[in-house]
Image: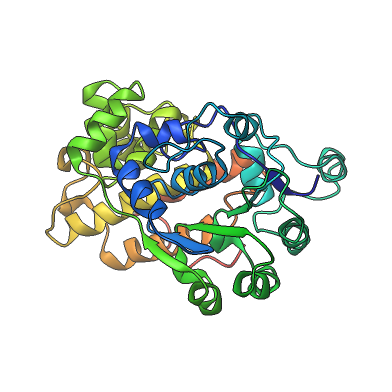
Length: 364
């Protein structure tokens, strides 16, 4: 088995997860699924910002296309042999192509050779979709369908294809062999090669209403106050709000983070991944700049933020934002996660207290 995973993780059932049940609970995704299933096309690009369910929609499309007994609305039945094979990751006609970091994060199996390399620490898991995995996927697309309903390739996040990997896909995407369909899901479609985008039919993800998001989050187990608070923290993106909840965040602990950052307290951030910590600090930087300019914060309550007169000047805040963007590049592979976290929070404290130098840091 190559780094291109086969079929779907049964435990990942959120709107950002991998199976149709997550879509069924998210009405905004269910509407989009129905519309897409009524259209023809061998390659789709699902694009939009994070937190809107691209991954779930891509997987639901694949499940519907491969289903042995689709529903009258063309969605998957969820009970046939094909749907079961997808649920247990054994469907021979479904290939899911992801970076190794994403596969590990979501519990996808790696082939034995690759897993041994990682276990032996010969290299770190790739945060890009490697060209070797793409070549395996192209080989998969050229095989005859095992179950007679064609084959499906899901690529997520599609922007993680480097130029070499993307170019390897181009010819197959333009002239697919046999009955194979592609669905690329992206949270940063502008990073894709124009030639990739031009070969796909594009669907822009639609935002749910606040009422839909709150109802769905409560179905996922969030208390009403946390659903409302974390949805606000996520900028209205329900999947991102659910991710904060699963990281142990509540509406109350979220509002305490600005003061914790200003005080240089690492513990309130300890349950978060490095990328999540950077996400929090980027939101804090955004709101600090907004307050500093006399505006209204977007992600935190005004009462949770320092007063405008207590904030540093816009140059220091702007440089901090640039530093955080740079830090994000190494967030998936920090050499020392504990020290990385201390550095992030320490820099935040320096900026928010107006100490230290505002000059740009050297590239890591």
